[in-house]
Image (cartoon, rainbow, N blue to C red; front, top):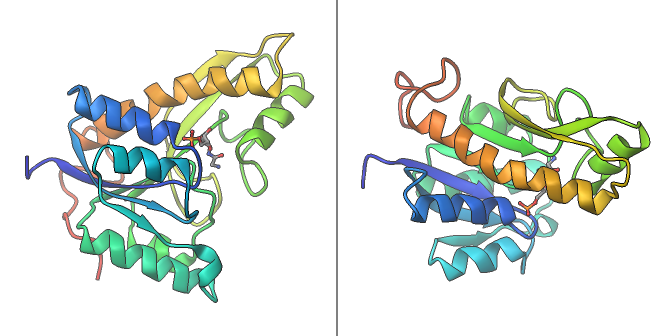
Length: 212
Ligand code: GAR
């Protein structure tokens, strides 16, 4: 049990991506251990899901911190105390300070509800992404799992899954179709990292401790 990859999940919302990870871990399809679920939103659905599965839960309310960096330092303190090796953003709606990104080189991943580099960057989050995809008349959308770097929605892509955009789609129907693929994609990508299959980011040669 102790040699499993330890992950921290950061979530701001309902937490269906977190739930998919929990379900895949519990059914043995994903061989990692969640050592922290952290939300910036007190009462977020993701926290209730984590509590139900007796996972260590933490609230770091960004409204209580004078700066982005102070908020990020508190996140890092929890992540390091819990000895997480990989940080998985599961609908975490905060942009990090350079401090946080530098503290975890190649150790932060995100899932985004579009086929990056299209429909990414500041302002493209949650349903706004699907609104933009529909407004542009795209025939295909999907989701992307990628490493997080200093630019929003920009780091190296690990994998993508696509879905058709149908003529009768609304934001909700498209979001649901993409979300189903997200639930598969995130476990797939985390599994690849846990097995040391990637050449970049966290792999067999990466020391397990984050930088001091
Ligand atoms: C997901 O669609 C995720 O891709 C998106 O937020 C949703 C969270 O859903 N993330 C972003 O837009 C980040 N830019 P969930 O809380 O049900 O997992």
